[in-house]
Image (cartoon, rainbow, N blue to C red):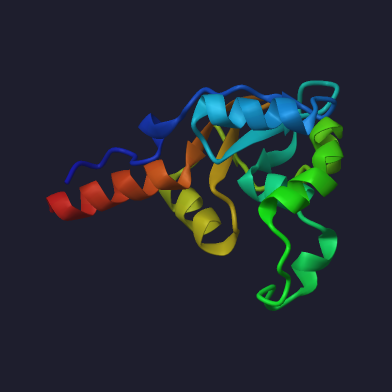
Length: 154
């Protein structure tokens, strides 16, 4: 096994969303980027949070679903929910952004990435420069793959 970082080569440059972008724009950017979440920047271009699959599902479905332990008794179709909540596509991303700052600096370590993935329910970790501007992201999937390959080669 080499002593090189697993995480460093995994940095992906991705679009950074603005809090003023619509949910529609953000979802299109997610699909186009092929990742599960994208960073959101504030008006000064600094990291403000994350918008991804989880935040989109939260925007589409009514808030009370988060409080339920099961929704098997609710029999509405997906099309019914999409019709009822269609307006959320025009809402600003800022309204649905996950704002817990789970990120790393440019000098991150593999242990730091592992700790974040173990203790936080995030699918991407933004990598920020010293001005808190987004350099890119590291996805949980890429980190797992690199970690697994490194473990299996030894």
